[in-house]
Picture (cartoon, rainbow, N blue to C red):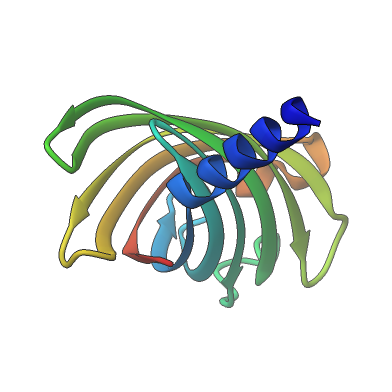
Length: 153
């Protein structure tokens, strides 16, 4: 019974130490030459984090590049922090890209990011990443840059 009580106390301490984060961002996909907007829901525990994101781009740049939706799941790790500022962090994840016309497909996402506190619970974030997908969605491959805000609860 003692072990169960100790595990319950440790589990509650772990959940209180972590923070759920809700974010909004705007970005640019240099592979398809499109701008996008997005939202994310994340969880941060110390130097590690995980985020579920949804991005949408709407434009008709060329006949092969259409508007698209992207659902992504990424894990992150802070590598260099100065106070509360994450000067350098890395991320790795997977994305599902669903264009308005054509076939959908999966992609790998790798990137670097920074986080800078604005208030106690709100931070300004920047992200530079590269997306590489299946042949059927190759027109969306390439570098991406985004910036936005996230709020921790």
